[in-house]
Amino acid sequence: MLKKLLIANRGEIAVRIIRAAKDLGIATVAVHSVADAEALHVQLADEAVDIGPPAPKKSYLNAEALLKAAKDTGCDSVHPGYGFLAENASFSDAVAAAGLVFVGPSGDAIRLMGDKVAARSAAAAAGVPVVPGSAGRVDSIEEAREILLETGFPVMIKAAAGGGGRGIRIANTLAEFEQAFPQARAEALAAFGDGGLYMEKVIGKARHIEVQVLGDGNDAIHCYERECSLQRRRQKVWEEAPSKALSERQREDLCASAVSLARAVGYSGAGTVEYLYDDAAERFYFIEMNTRIQVEHPVTEAITGIDLVAEMLRIAGGEPLRIKQRDVAIKGHAIEVRLNAEDPARDFAPFPGQISDLRIPGGPGVRFDSMLYPGYQVPPFYDSLLAKLIVHGETREAAIARLVRALTELQVGGLKTTKPLFLALAADPTVQEGDVHTRWLEGWLSENAAKLAG
Image (cartoon, rainbow, N blue to C red; front, side, top):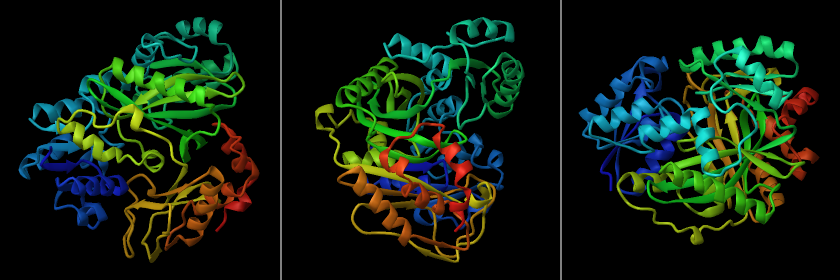
């Protein structure tokens, strides 16, 4: 088992990792920028190290500073959380080269699955269906025009090294395509340092369904699926498990395909295999694999009872998978909503500030993962995610009712948050029926802006 862990992250995920580590008797070291000196993860860790100025490039993305902090404090391991350097193959390699354990997959696995084109090829080789599109990277617009003969319109142009919805363009006509292709390349290069692109056919009214996997490098299991179809600008805002859309046979096939891919690449740690599900055709297609813990992992924990972060730490410490597939079962339904420091009534404008008061919801089936406390000054330098509210009930209907109750209890004074969005969504008949797709929320927002003031 690991003895001392450096958490190379901040915010609610750093708090989450610290708690899991302490449950296992692992000492914890937090890192923080100057702006995060008073952050909750700093207060909860056994030790804390200042790693630089507020700008992420000079602190949380500074691999040299992170490794120095780990060495100086006698850590034997590093957990990257999500975001920042979590899916950076070079960082994983550097941690290993420094004689430390990277809590996650190897640099080679991250490199393979982080390149969306290589991941598509690996998925196809493992027998996982992929969205029709380019077989590899598309190097020129001339080559892209040839691929259009197969995909037709609409078509999606995506960054090969992408994530977070960046480097993506949808074209409905050849004229739009000719304009979007160079734009996507420039954005991908600026965001990821890699201008590589690939193309996929757009699946109309697709659902976004993903499968949680755990692997130890030799074997892998799944922990069932999550549905993440409620998205704004390709960013998830509401996640739930299990998906209402799948039959038991479809669920079995989907999860089995994810395990096949994880085994094929010798995956170690927690990962997520993401799919588009075509409701009309009742078919699913692989889109990518995230080689890290996901923001939405608590909904899987709620329906399975498995502490995914703890299992990551055990696997990284050299233990084989403790959990057999036959022991993983779905119990009830869970929903997670992301509470962001944004004003939904003003097109989700960022709203950093000081927490004047805080009331956290509780009771059966309610979990609140956050970095908040009264008096905390939310800095303007980072992602606007403040907290995640997770609810669990015997049925989906019960979970939605519990979500409304918990949101009503929740009070965050001093800031505008996305709470009004979730109250409005929970009251919407289409959401209550679960009849949504990845582009549904964008249309709903354009028609329901008045409901978001609060």
